Image (cartoon, rainbow, N blue to C red; front, side, top):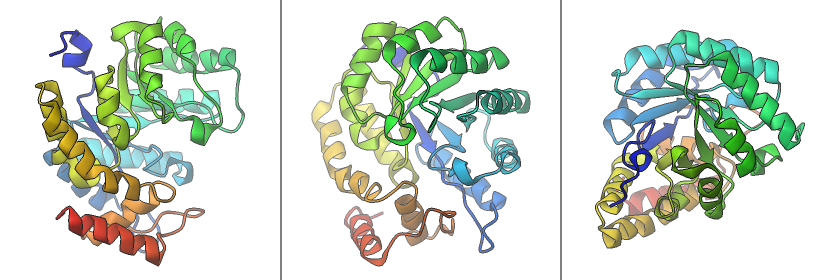
Length: 301
């Protein structure tokens, strides 16, 4: 239906699950469960796994925990499953070091978030990301724009300048604005692989040029999301829209409060003992959990 090479052959595949980090009763990372969950996700719709992102609670993981988590998961998965590691930081030197280590450890890509809290100007963002790109020149990078969490917006013209680096190839667009895709394509052309950062916006974003999604809901409905994308790519828009609308309550329920609180609760409801989030995040409250349970039952998950 759409002939552009990047759209038909996306860099990391269509569905990348931003995987939760399982914790045991003591609050330590449960590496064995992470292995089981990542393989389950790959077998149920995911083309790749994103570790140590927002959903993976990267702010409360130590660098050593992040490295050990990547080593455990990457070593257990089929080689066709891409493993992308969150290596971003609001400290350029930390992000450079983490990205270089991910490359040396065999990651398939790195997710690098816009620096948070210190709110650099666009020039500072360019220096930050160019330093990361130079630190691991053969590692594909996915920029991560999520101004609602970082307090800073990476503008399309800055992304265009950054595409001079051969390993800056993609972006997770999580501003919550469909227009972001159009603005990025206008500035950068079809060479940039744009991934929706919101499950609820996947279908509308694909209609204007996104190639896939970095997903939270794929923990639960990976095969359904794959079906929706298949129908869209094959021109069966009404069928894709039917799935999009059917899944909206789940998309909304998974963000009723701060991610990953709801998705961890949903996994627990389905038998995955991934544990509670680390402080300062708190478990889902009773009312929200009951609502989420109803959504899951209505979808027959």
